Length: 277
Image 1 (cartoon, one colour):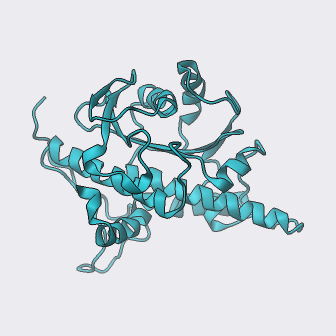
Image 2 (cartoon, one colour):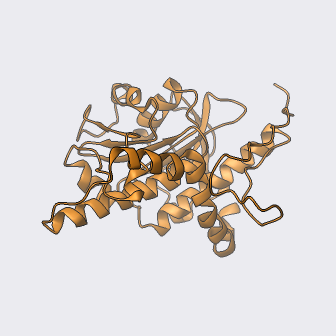
């Protein structure tokens, strides 16, 4: 396969209502790449940034937690954080690349078995999915014990309205057998997030690792908000289905997730330059 790629056509100007109509203003632009190697480097840098962002959010729990992004040239391969390396210590030099069978083809560290079982199954079953995120978070894990979807109690929660599922297959059982991944992967058709009962949260993106990471952060936050509201003992006022769908369309898209993450990435670039080592 040649290293050079065809130029990417300019994105339509109406990709988001947040794009400025006035020309010449500073605003994040979706990158284009001259070569697959350049795109690979970009994805690896953003994968590392996503791991560092998870550290900032306090999403660490021992060796649990795995983030993956598909290789742009070899779609049967994906990049992921190394086993038993804290999110705060993930960097370009210690990322690993593995195939859908869990074989490490680049890197010195071992792969997380549970991460391989779940993520590889989803990546293999859904060629359109570029990235996935999972971590054992406090509020997401607590909410997952309820075995129910999020309610549209806010604009933030409406971003997930009719765009997430509750998975009951393999609930509560550690996913180290390959059939566990097969039981879960079919649920990711046409949604960006899943609440795995008695386990926790997962997000997937057909756009970028940045989108997958931000929507994971947002989903954890929404789980916390809903439990706080319910702890008040008062019945929350729901956003109507029509308004929830409108909000999801405008603030819940893959592009918006990518756009949100740009603020996180800029902060990390300025404060944690070692992530590119």
